[in-house]
Image (cartoon, rainbow, N blue to C red; front, side):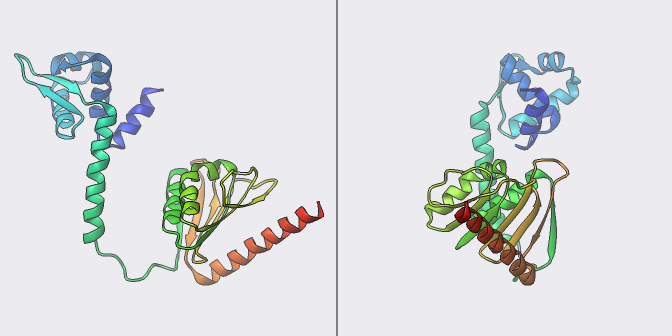
Length: 235
């Protein structure tokens, strides 16, 4: 795996770019002094010591006190678990203390980028109370398979329109020949996410809880399902 990808993933766990670079170096080379880390990474000694202190503070490294202080990387799985545990604790606090509007907006929101679209879809699925209708490319269905499986295990209705059978026991599957990277998701007949889901950076989706839009959208999807059923019966 390219270092650039590794560095990006590590920054997602709260490390700066320099801290992530030093962490990778510690993982690969074992314990080091600040001087040794500076020589191996090319980072100035003053910045190295600041970043090593940052690694210790964030739980990514331990400091061994000897004649010359040495730094040891914390196992990556342990570091990630600790960070996730801390973020879950922070999430619980924020959920309790950050004020929220009394009613959800019924406006239209633009969700841009594949990661944000996937996150929005996952959160919508996680908040489902009764049923979902999902029309999406098979790659997108696979990306949210865990969430769909969870809904089925809870006894909630899951209807999927895609090219290939996702093999989700209990889900209603309707096969479509082509989807042209289009995503359509309806949750509890109350919220819609629709747009592009081709995993390209230029992908955008529209999210809304506007009642008239949801009703029209639901009717269009219902008619599409009826057409698929009719075609299947004729075939």
